[in-house]
Image 1 (cartoon, rainbow, N blue to C red):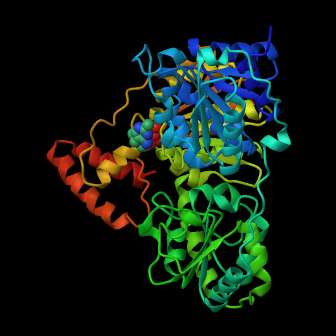
Image 2 (image 1 turned 90 degrees about the horizontal axis):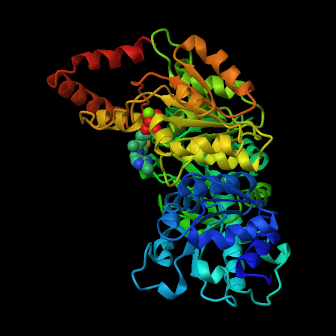
Image 3 (image 1 turned 90 degrees about the vertical axis):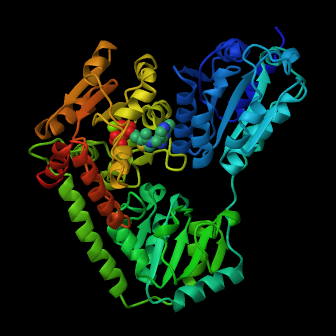
Length: 574
Ligand SMILES: Cc1ncc(C[n+]2csc(CCOP(=O)(O)OP(=O)(O)O)c2C)c(N)n1
Ligand SMILES: [Mg+2]
């Protein structure tokens, strides 16, 4: 049999080092999956929902830094990829998606399952093209791959099922050295480095805000902080890269951050933003000098007015500027920030202690962090699980943390755990799932068993869409539509042939997690946690207090006085 376009696609992915493709089969995709089956070099990981395939590919790309691939069949099949792809695109991880398409002769006829993927995928990709002929395919796929790895984004190739089955063109398969160009180091211009040095030398109280762009720059950051006697605040995406082994760490800022991170930014006279696009304007200080370092010049200054824009890698920029810095000796700003952090940290650690009356999610997270392996991969669902992860997971430079930190979609955690576990079979993978997030894409619990992925899924079973409930209460709304009536998730897992562990009290946390982590296969840990946890962010404390007062008044008026008492009790009498 002569080589088909689909065969050629498989060979190209193989050359690009792709080990597995996540997806779900369908008529229009059969040519491709059959080519995969015949060639037998790339694994087909079939999931129950295409959204999971996209999240899983994104997690693989996040962990490995390499290209990952997902695929969906025509119409609804690839439409289901979209939410997960938005997450990949906004998290800036290299993913190629194959969107199989209806028969080429029918495009535009209003055919069964017809959509226009080039339009649909436009917003969640940096490259999206329709392949209409065999001669066109190699160049489109190669460009998609180069686009994804160069810009760390999603690239989509739309291909009608019949085109995939046509004989391939005579185009040779590109080698890896051509498909996967290495990103060069970006060093800022010499006059920019001088201007940065001048600003930092003039500053008396300097604070660093560090984001995901600080990956790989830990040692450089510490040298900079030491030279400047500067506290290091991080945004959530910076946590896995900057928080560990860091004597200058003063915590996270932002809506779900804690007070010391916010205070260290408020107290400075010079703020240096390093590899962060931290979006919340209200958390930036006013009336201070600000320099921002990023590899993408276009994102500089879009959150806060900056005095100096620096295009460069974080590590390369620090290395360039350090020789021009006069080491500072005054440690008062740093000392104050560290003292504040110590207090804030103690308060948080206190919340993670076992409660007498309730099982607190903070305790479960802290114990999971303590009992997990040194190179564990954690994923956390959007909602309160992200808050607990940000505050109670301890990173060490080898552990990883993946969430939906830009797109902010629910149901990311278990889906990402699937990709993380598939890409790193030897590592412990722990999903911190909300009961809302878990049940949203619960069908793919079955994939853990079917694909033999031993991920540990901790479900924070608080019987509610908790984060939103908290938001509603804190803005003075009486909470509506947030109740979740759940089954016993551990029993449900058992019924599906997956180990289930149910934890209902503080004493059961350690033995329950230890048992789950020791199990060689997948496990669902149903942690029945307190519904009414207060996770009050720093700057909004005052407004929240007002909101809570209003809420309580409304709740009392609505005959829910018991709840008000319970809320107060469960947070005071832990
Ligand atoms: C797909 C999607 N739908 C809705 C939301 C809005 N939202 C954000 S967090 C949240 C609640 C999450 O509930 P759960 O997973 O149970 O976590 P909890 O906060 O209760 O721990 C909702 C509805 C969202 N972010 N994504
Ligand atoms: Mg919940």
